Structure formats: structure tokens, C-alpha cells
Image (cartoon, rainbow over all chains, first blue to last red; front, side, top):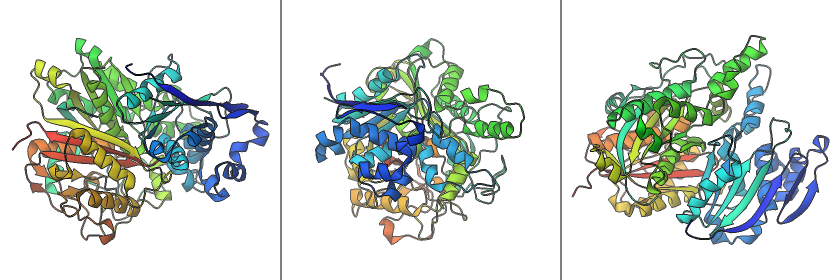
Length: 196
Length: 396
């Protein structure tokens, strides 16, 4: 590596708590008080109307929340935002949303048209980009080796974007928050903002 | 990406058949290869035209995406003068695959069996994840270098090729097989239908009456090498990857920026990475899905880039259908065929220009000598990937 990199912020999201460099650790109240499922609350957090917030899937809401918790959006000027990439390494991708959409295809169900675009893992990254005005490359990757930490894998993909000058800042996201359409145990989502 | 990468092999499987010759003949014929869905029943969408690969033999329970990818990768290796299973060269060979659905076609069958109480092979769930397809193809061809799986919606295949170029430029591999593969499945067919994004009359890119895309399936791969290693083994160079760029609209999770601002930035950056100007471009293979919003946004981006001096532009999705994660790779192979065989593809399905798009695509197949092409691939999430591909020899 030829140039030192700066860590601008970091955040984590777990099924029972979240925290980040720009927010105090908070506990969730558990599945009965699932804040990510509440479009009114999500709308207030991100200055969206509830209808717009409702159109995001849970993964998108989780990624927006984690990106906000890094504090990056407040640190970046408009020019930097246009040069900010998002890279994610995810084992599950959009699997929870895939299942929810597939369930809606059952003969007696109504097709959940609004969910369909989120059955592609990059759509959730697009939601983060749209939310915070990030115009650099978006890359969603599957893990290359199950035994290698996802953080190492996402940094391996993110750092070259900075070194080649394709981005001034990278939001590097490792892992998954949901294991099923209704949440899952033991999953970790971590987000790092890095720059040259 | 900066710096030229040699393209020494190409392979493609599409609705028109298996192989580059079938694809080139389909483009020369100028007709659509869309037809009725045969492989599975779809009560809601069975009447919609699709670009299905009918020649491919896939063993029961085996992954259709892997079968498509292996077939295209084999052709790419053969045309690069390489054996179907790489020996010692496999250590320095990367495999980069773009896919959206991964093992979903088989998972859907397994889910239906599970619901009906029938036994299910648990291995199907291990093959569901997109990366499993990459691992299977890498094993099959003996690629033991870097292995990446890209899932960025409809730009996946193009982004896989761009990433492979970066791996080569960084010296992380000597040879890269890069492309995309996707198979038709109920999830995507019902999904696009539920968004009213499928045209019952078939995909009509940039046409005034267009009503949506037509889904397809297929795979395509390029064999990419650093110039020095291609030269060292005496490989014939088909074309060159001169530059690439990737941007995000940052506009909406699913809708494109109406003015195509993100796409325009990607076009400009790809040309800058290649050290070329808009006036140097001889042909653009547009993303051209046939949806009202996408074609309008892309047309505006192209019009803003080229102003009154647009080169021939066409979309080949009316011929093959929109193969999602494979589409960008299929269209990169089309661009390589245009450069090597000397033609400009037409736009099957197009009959009347839409002034809202601000461009008029090439209708008919033409013979020509393009030297520099752009291949556009855009996707949900606002992804915009542009590849800049040049002839093996720059020409006058």
C-alpha cells in the first residue's frame, strides 16, 4: 500500500444493539419493538415521508441506519459525496427479501411488487447512495473464502478504489443484519468510512 | 480502469444459440429471438415473450447458471487458444462472475417440493448463493487465482469485466475469465411483470411505443490478459479493454435519474480512462432495455455526451432479451464481435423514434469497421457501468 488511509467513521448493527462513531450505543427493545419495521420511525430518522420509508426493504433501512451512525454523511461535502463509493461483501445478499418476495408469489398471495427491486443486493446500496447523495461506484460482492473475515475481504475490494483514484471516500460494508425476512440471530453488520 | 488490457478470447450463450457464430448470425439476421417460455410453467407470465436458451443440456438438479457460465467460459478459453481445464496456468487465473439470480432457479423448484412434502436435496441450498456459481465454474476450468462474484443487478456482467481489468492492471493475475451468467426464473419474471416492466409485444428499445423489456437468459465471458503475457504466449489479440467506469445515480433506489446524469458521468469517465474523446467513438452498444424511463434517461445521457455528432447506437436486447446479470457481458462480447468481424448491430423491435430519448438508434445491421466502442450497462440501485473497447490494432 503506497499511501496511508484514514478511517473517517465506523458503525455496527446487531440484532439487539447498534452503535457508531457518531452515536451512542443503543439497545433495541427486541423483535417485539422492531424499529426497522416501523416506517414512521424510519421516516423521522431519515427525513422521509412514511410512504417513501415503507418502500425501502429492511436491508436498505438497516444499511441507511448504519451508514448514518458512522457520521460520514455529516463529514462529506457535496463534491466528496459524488466521489464516494459503496462496497459491500455479503454472504446473504438480499436473501431475506428474496424469500419475502417469493412468498408473495404463492397463488393465494398478492405479489409484493415494491419488494422486487430489493431482491438484488445492489438496490439496498443504491438506497444508501440516494439517501446520502453518494455518486461513486457501487459494488456488491459475495465472500471469496468463508474462513476469511468479511472485513478483510471488503477492505481488499475497497482500498484499491481509493488508491486508483476511482473514489475519494469508500463506505465499506461487511456482513448481514437479517437472516430471515423477520430478522435473524447472531448476525453482524459493520460499516467503515475510509479515505486517502 | 487505466491502461490497455488484451482480450484474447470470447464466448457467449444466448437465446440465439451457443457460441459467437450463432450470436453474430443472429445479429446479421436482424430479427428477434424472443419466444414463449418453455422450461417452467408461469401462470402469471407465461404469455410474455422471453429470450430462453433452448439448446443447453442441464442435468436434473444441476445449476442452470453454472451450466450457462461453463459453456460460455469454455468457448472463451478455446478461442484464446487455451485448454478447457487450465493446468499450471490456473494458479495465475482469476475468475470474475456477475450474476443476479445465482441458484434461484433450482431453489424455486426445491421450495415447491418442500411445500408439497417431497424430499429435497439439501445441497441445493448450498448452491443458492451467487458465489457458489463462481466457485463451481472456477473448479471446472481450473482457475485457482482471485475469485470474485459481483451482484450489481443488470450491470453485474460489465462490472465483472471492469474488475477483471483492474486485477490484471494491478498484477494480481496473468489471465482473467470475466463475464456474467443468469437464468430465467419465476422470481425475476414475476418481479418485472409486477412492476409492469415487461412489454407484451416484446422488447422495443428506444421505440416511441415501447412498454418495457423482455427477460432473457444466457452467459458470456471474455478472456483478458495483460499485453505482456498475451504476447509472451503468442495469443491472438481480438480486441482491447481500454477503459471502464462505474458511477451511481444517487437519485432513487430503483428509478434512473431522468436526465441520465449518473450515466453521463460514467460515459465521460470511461472515455477519460481510455484517453479518448467522444468524437473517437464509432459505435455504442446501449443498455437500451425498452423501459420508458431507462431508455429516456440513457438517450439523454448519450445525447449530452455526443451532442449533434452521435455515432451509431443500438441495443441488442430486442434480439436476445435482457439477461440481467449476464447482459453486460453479452453486450461486451457483441462489441468485441463488432470490432473483430466488422459490423454494427441493429436494434430489433425498433420502428419509430421517441423524441423524448433525443437519440435515434440504428435500425438495421450494417457492415462497417468500428475501431472504438462503448458498452453501457445500468441497473437497479442507480449503477452505471461503461466499458470502452477498442480494436486490436488502433487503425488509421
